[in-house]
Length: 342
Image (cartoon, rainbow, N blue to C red; front, top):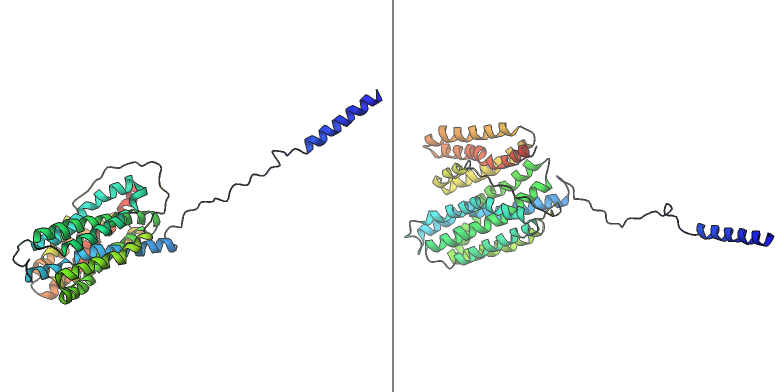
């Protein structure tokens, strides 16, 4: 009996030791893999400002060239084989018309296929550069309308659409300021690029000048596409929204058609200034107030000054005021978007 009791005690002791050697589930501390994911900061940080600078440069080179077409128009009207044509003015208006009308159609695939949207900038720059290079072989205005007008406009709005989407992701509280800075590039490009283009045309002629500018456009802007990238991860599903466009800004371009090249330069500078000054106000003021100020200022300058501009100083005053009030309309869009999302 004592031997049996001893064996039972030994078995209990060994079983207890065996159990204590098993790891307890509660004693195991789970160490998750070091795969922390954090988004870059908004409204600040190196990546946000690099994106803004890259978008500004692309906007200045692409849309700035569209605003600089007056240099080419003057050259075409005085040099064969285009001087005998009456359709030269259609080239520039087609370029800007396709750029602005095409933006809603370019934004749609960018939102539906966000994984591919980043490459739209490089695709647009390639099309624009190819259109400019091809236009150097044109011998009539119809061919120029197709290359410098339609194809260049197509490349322009494709290159611009990703910037419009990504700025909205990288800037929240400074959204108006960010959009204003980028959209001011078109006016500044339209003010200073004519100096370079005029020099190229005078020195090398039409064919060489367009080829040189095509190379400058692609070489200087293509590397910048590396910084134009989304901040948010790609969504697994997309929800298409209906497109609703309005013709509220269609009259903005009318004065520019009838202004001389020097007056258009002043207008472009004023538009850029309006972007920079007014766009930050949308971050602090009610958007209805900003819209009212822009509409009244643009209408008053056109009604009271443009119609009585018999002298150049008065015309220049109109360019300044109209550019400030009418040109800043686009910079109000971030405030409008914020009011709808609130």
